[in-house]
Structure formats: C-alpha cells, structure tokens
View 1 (cartoon, rainbow, N blue to C red):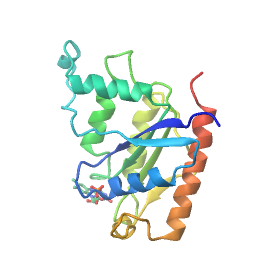
View 2: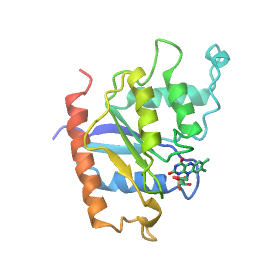
View 3: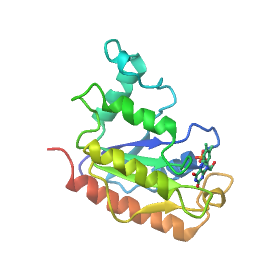
View 4: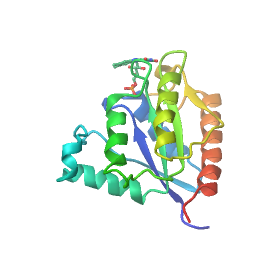
Amino acid sequence: MSNPRDVAVLVGSLRKESLNLKLAKALVTLAPPQLKLDIVEIRQLSIYNQDGDENPPAEWLAFRDRIRKADAVLFVTPEHNRSVPAALKNAIDVGSRPYGQSAWDGKPGGVISASPGAVGGFGANHHLRQSLVFLNIPVLQQPEAYISGVDKLFDAQGGIVSESTRGFLSKYLTAFASWVERNAAG
Ligand code: FNR
C-alpha cells in the first residue's frame, strides 16, 4: 500500500479540556489506513496583521510550511457565538497570506463541528465553509458532521461511549479518505 495521506487536523479550541480536542484525538485513532491524522497546534500564532508580511514571525512561517506539506486539512471546531472561533479564523488568515501564496490552495478539506448543544455547531461549520470556498479548499459535502451533545460523548480515557457516533465518525473518515484521493494534488 502507498504511504498514508498526511492530514493536518486543526482544532478550533485552545482550551486544555477542549471537547473538540478530545474529538480530534478520537478521530486520530479511528482513521482508516489511507489517512494519517496529525493535530497541528494553532495557539502559538499571533493575531494576523498585514504589517507582519514584511518580516513574518517564525511561528507564521512554520505554520504555513506545515500546511503546505499536508495532503489535506480537517477542521474540528466548536461554535463561538454561532460562528468560527477567533483562534481558528486567525490560523486560516495566517495560512492564507501573503496574497497569492496561500498555503491552503487546492488542499482537500473536511469540517466537523461539535457542541454540547443540540445544533452541533452548525453555524460555525457553515461560516467556516464560506472561507474555504474563497481559499479554494474543496470540502467534503456528505456526510455532514454536526456532533451534538459532545459533553456526553467521552469516557474518562477519552474513548467515545456512543457506538452509533463512533460508527458515524468512522464512516465520515472513510468518505474523507476517498475525497482526499479524488482531490489529491498531482
Ligand atoms: C460558546 N458555546 C457555544 N455553543 C454553541 O453551540 N453555539 C454557540 O454559539 C456558542 N457560543 C459560545 C461562545 C463562546 C465565547 C464560548 C466560550 C462558548 C459553548 C461551546 O459549545 C462549549 O463551551 C464547548 O465546550 C466549546 O468547545 P471546546 O472548547 O470544549 O472544544
């Protein structure tokens, strides 16, 4: 079998006990052999400011390089005030510049949102998709992934307690693996 595709996983929460981080870690273990999921840190990124383009901070450059190296990107995010958390939007902005040199261009992508609430972060999921259209990230359309009740999803070891949700996430990752293959560069 060829090498697994390198998937950069971006988690939209900086919280130590983040439920979305737990979900991302669970996804790492559920990934099919065609994918290798790697959680890429975004907390070190200072707020994007175009003035920084002349002399960019080292962490912006390292982040852009990491995204360029990836075969695909998977966003796992909470919803903040019915939209994308600022830290994740900042990472997207940092990766998108300087103009004409976006690290995101053409990378196949996926979006999973999760919330303790019933709507599963739908607002964040779809606001995020708006940016991804502009960034030319072809995003998996189906299945959609809005994970509700995420505060009740994990046991003390971070395992997923709901068999149906575990099954759904495995199905999502299988569809994502096909999507990545279909949209792979070159
Ligand atoms: C929230 N939360 C939230 N939940 C939701 O379903 N819709 C929303 O619009 C918001 N808005 C919101 C704003 C801000 C500033 C915070 C801090 C939180 C609740 C949120 O879903 C909950 O705190 C999750 O646990 C956050 O995800 P992590 O940090 O656990 O991954």
